[in-house]
Structures are given as C-alpha cells and as structure tokens.
Image (cartoon, rainbow, N blue to C red; front, side):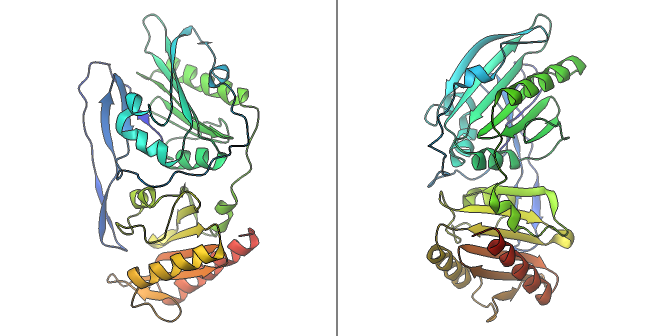
Length: 337
C-alpha cells in the first residue's frame, strides 16, 4: 500500500476523509481512505480491517544489502538530517495503524531518511525491504493513483508523493509541501535510488493469469490475504478462499462491472479444498457448472483446476461468466500452475 504523505505543515491537526461505495455484486459497502497525522508525519492510510494470521512469503535466500547505501545523502541542496530503521515489531512507532498493512505484505525493515534545506519543505524517503519482489509489487499495486513517473519497475507520482517498486524494494518519497523545486528533487531521489538497486525482478507469473482483453491495468491488485481482497472488493467477512502466506492472488476489473479473481495455491489439494469451501458457503445454489445468479441479476462463476482457482464476478450472462472462467483457467495452465 502506498502511504500517501499529505503535503501540509507539521502542526496542522489531523483530518479524516472517508467515502463509501456500493459493491453491486455482493451488496456490501467498503471504506476507501482516511487521512491521519502521526508523530509529525502526515500520511494517507487506506483503512482496512486489522490484518492477522499470515504473512507473505519472502525470498530469504538473497542477502539483503544495507538500505542506507541505496539512498543518497544529498539532493539539490537538501541534506540528510538523520536515519531511522524500523522492523515488523517497531513499525508501529513510526506509522502506527498502517504497520499492519505492511506486515500483511511481510516487509522486513524500512529505512526512513529525512532531508532538510533552509527555507524549503522537508523531504522524506521511506525505503522498504519487502523480502521478495512479489511483495514489493503487491504493496505498490495497493494504490495506483497518479501519473507514471518512469522510475523503477513501476511508479506513480501525485501531490508531492512518488511511489515505486524495484526488485524486493518499495519506496515512498514525499515532500511536505509541493512546488516545482520539491517535485524535481523527489523525482531525482527516486531515480537515484532505483539506479542504486542493482537488479530487476521478473514479472510474477500470477499476473499472466488475468485475460488481457478488456482488462483495466490500473485496477490490477496483487495480494495474499482476504483482508486486502476485502479492501479492494468486499467478498465476505471470513476467509472463504483460504488466502494466506502460501497463496498468490490477483484481482482485475473489466468493462460493465465484471471482475476476475484468480488464486494460485501451493498444491492442487489446497485449491480443491478452497473451491469446495467457497462453493458450499458462498454459492450453495450454484448450478452443476459452478455458476450462480445474484440478486442484482448478474452471474458469478467458480472454477478450479490444478493449483488454480478462479472466481468471475458480475458477468452480464451465464455464458459470459463461463467463458471468462474457462479463459482464466487456460491461462493458469499456460503459466505453469
């Protein structure tokens, strides 16, 4: 998730902004976002349920370099004034409630470096070692609002905040007030950090499962917990799909309100167990083909093959639901799941 740092003064009182949206396929509401200020840091925390039970898998075989060497000590007259390093146990001392969000993506540590310049807003770099490229990309996809800044392997810039990912790292770089000078400095910091990260990661295979035709790439979310799924699209309070640290899940949106959720499990048995659980509890009236009509007159399809499971949500017709599910399962096979 992007911690969106709000460019306001340090003494401004925190404010809250929330908006809700109707989920037409499931008849649920979800909260999008809240602005808080904490310990002098102003951040936009996307409000989700408290995340418990399961951290994302890490690449523990790769030796993690010193985060400090990846971040410059000076940029355009701004000089580093000090570093703080936080791990999964101490992250709450820095960003409090949002710590659980990063823990759900199993981050290892974060380096926070502040830059100061006379008569200029402070700049702050938060560089996260997420342990694996999939986790780094996952947390980046949590919020894709903003313009592409062409930094790292994927980036967004909006309102003084640059976010990007590369390899196992996720970076959030922000100015406490935005102007042309701070924008240039923030982007320069991002490019220099990205260049200092030596490797790029391959595209996670799970992303290739979503059918390309009609896919709105700005809506693609990568995750492994049902709490994150419910933030983006509420399905159920319980973990009906057995999402957890050993699963890889991706959600994408298509025209006319259709969504596709694809989950890769560690084994075919695990996928089958999740399939049976979801169908029994969530779709008890589904046809033999695994398709159910919702109260809104849309169609939900459930399919499973090998280690893959697919849920097509909000299809306009039974045949459209079946077609999209079959296409996604075929992509699972082609991707080696």
